[in-house]
Length: 127
Image (cartoon, rainbow, N blue to C red; front, side, top):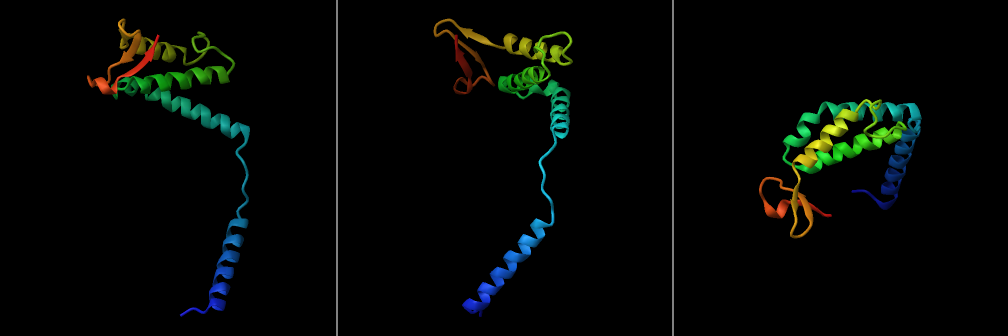
């Protein structure tokens, strides 16, 4: 059985060991170039998945993907539908999908996307 004194020595030794181990690995933040590469790689991957945006049955997936591509265009100093923006056609395709699958309820002035026929799962917005 440990005595209080030996327990304190054990904890002190363990603490010193952890400090030595963690202190021996220098930590540094990512460079801006590494951050930009990560963003570029993420957008490239997202666009490669475009066929699945709508196939999951949720308009939100397409909406989020389009929002990311729009934000990326702004990051590059372009507008999302600028013909010189590499992903402008992807943005347009996503918007077209959302508009083609939206339902307008004139009674309540709602626009919603029916996700599988479940009324309680409708994504809606007021107009």
